[in-house]
Image (cartoon, rainbow, N blue to C red; front, side):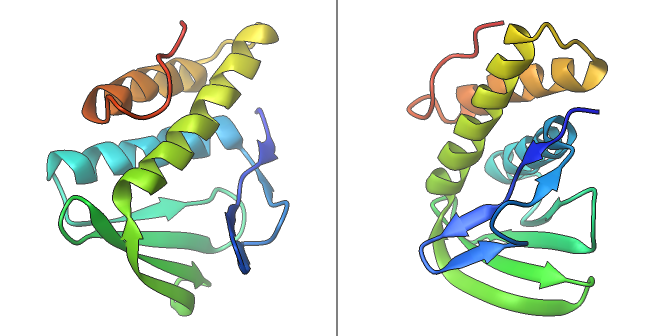
Length: 138
């Protein structure tokens, strides 16, 4: 499994912690899937899950431009809530991170079903947000 740093780094808050290490290809694949479902209107609220630890971020789509983020530890303990966060900003951050990870996988010639899924989800999210990120070079 490919691991790497994957955490939320807001101005005054890091979640789950500043340099959280997790199965980055798998987690980013999941997270892009969440944003795809939210953008397509398939659901109104989703969870960004981590593989390690009992941490998640719930994302509630408020109006396709804003969302509510809840940072959760232990399945029920809400550590922080951001009531209005731009959904395109979240998509841009995650898409950028996914593109960087995917490029590193290509550079190292790492191949797996998870890497293939990440590439597919990058392409799907890029189509939904054409003004974000750059094209996935696959």
